[in-house]
Image (cartoon, rainbow, N blue to C red):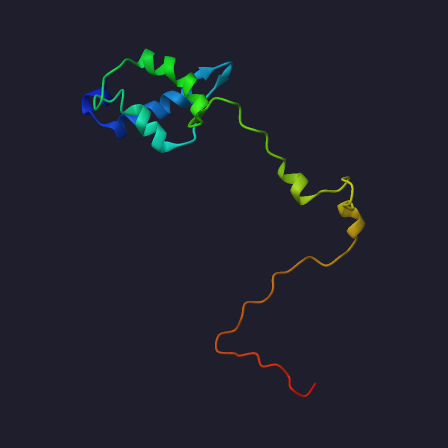
Length: 124
């Protein structure tokens, strides 16, 4: 009610985004807004700017909006574990870390010195 009393589409969009984060659709709880501009367009119809509708109506319409690709209720894709990127040992084409033996650690190059200009050697 507070968001409707403000008659602010931005305030209603903020409220609808919270509803999306808490809504359960097809066994998945917590949707994500993919397009804020479309969220504002949707929220306009609930903010009092274009019309006033109920929270129940918002929850009823949101799952169908997934087809419009501005909201998603799909579970997020699993990411690769961080260790696989740092230690790809055991994967084809990569040696295990133990195969590196006592190789010196990689060091970043030294920072360039100010005021020093590198000139190629012309004697060679």
